[in-house]
Structure formats: structure tokens, C-alpha cells
Image (cartoon, rainbow, N blue to C red; front, top):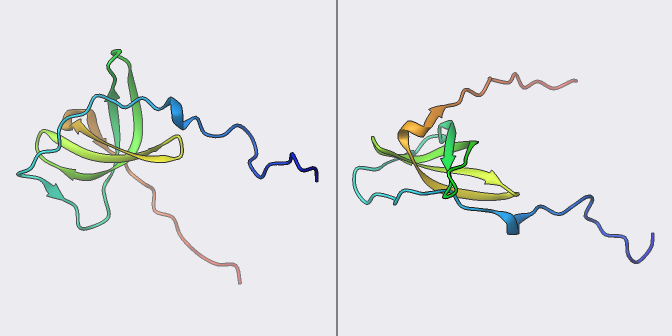
Length: 101
């Protein structure tokens, strides 16, 4: 191997190109923080330039009006307060775990 060989394969994640979505403030009262596994969801994030993006994430906390969620973008965890109407539950199929032998 040459000295110029890098352990990184491909183009590094473009973390510097991350644009945060429009976010709601995290409320101080009436918040249900999950103590179980965080429910999976789909969320439609809105941006300042009027564009939208649907992301796959988990609900960390919620109220009637807001969901405080987490998702992964550009290899980093991201958080946002999203209108509850922009979120919907995501079903994760159960996997049968078994071993060969």
C-alpha cells in the first residue's frame, strides 16, 4: 500500500451541507417522554425555502401539537420539534432471529 492510501472508502459524508429544518420550540409542560422503546415514525420536515423532506426517525417525546424526534442524516443524529400532523407511525416488521447450528 502506498502512503497516500486512506482507510476511508468513497466520498466522506457531506456533514457540512446539512440544512436544519424549520423547528418548533420544545415545550416545557405537558410533554410525554417515552420510557419504552421510542416509537418509529415518518416525519415531513419543512425548510425555510418551502421545500419538504420525509425522514425516517423515532419519537423521543410528544404533546398533542408537537413531536420531538430524532433521525440520522449525513451520519449524524439530528433532532427537531415537528408538528404532530406532519408525523405518522412507521411499522417495523418483526424479524425472526435464529442461528444456524
